[in-house]
Image (cartoon, rainbow, N blue to C red; front, top):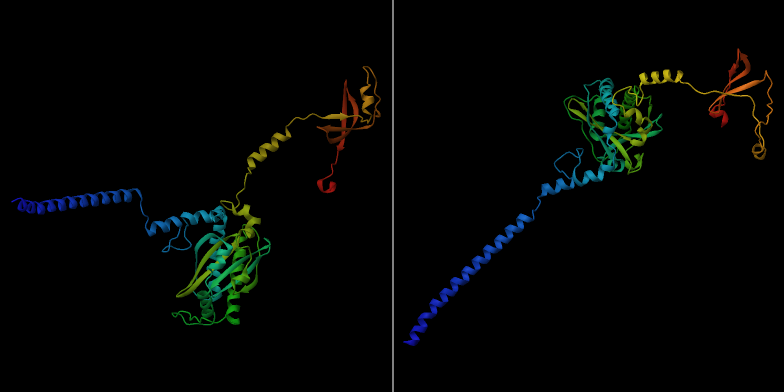
Length: 365
């Protein structure tokens, strides 16, 4: 009997132990999942879009758009073109002039549009130029510096096709893997000269600047007109000739625009900085009515300090000036007039004979 009871109790004990072990495992899993949920709530994982936004990289956006995140901090040292409001007016005028000039140049329906104006480092721009392309270095004579015009391959072949009588309705044929021929370079050069003439006309109301073509290059390394870290203004123009066309990019370093920077800071044409004609007229009126003290200098003598210290009360000083001698009138130590002594009634008077000519700064130098 005893052995039978012992053997019957063992399966029950084993089953209870298994149930307790299963309960403990379930509690452990619940505790682990709760801790993981708490950790997930405290530490949020960023997805790829949020990481790109933080770093300032937008693969789907336009490369010329606004920068954000870390890239905006890196590019914060560049001077924004918005600080030169008059420059936008100049290039809006250039777009209108180019539309008319290129229509006359190509005898075709040409539309020129301003795509974008932005600030960029010169080295970054050279590295981003899509090749093949023709780079035109031009000189701003009055500003004593250079600029750069980049013509992409689409516009080059379109201009050549139009000027040599290509049929309308067909896209210009591109031939890759060969350098540009002399004819292609000559035709592009003629177009660039038209653009430079329009730039001169666009800048003329602001300041007379003559733009002359210096050279044509196909390698960006040979078109370096500024240091890679220097800031420059990039103007992107789109030229459409019905179903043909391309891009023309104009690069102006800030060093080129520095001589006319004050003019480009104007909000409107002819703005005067810090000048008010009404205030100037009022100031001139008040100056004419200002009272000043005038000293009539009869004589000047140079003597030792010891003799001056020995002066006594009642001592007489002899002046080397006669009754009709010329005297000098001064104000604040500045010689102004020459005159002669006289008497009017019971008052001693001075008759003014003329002004004292003071030497200019150039004469003193």
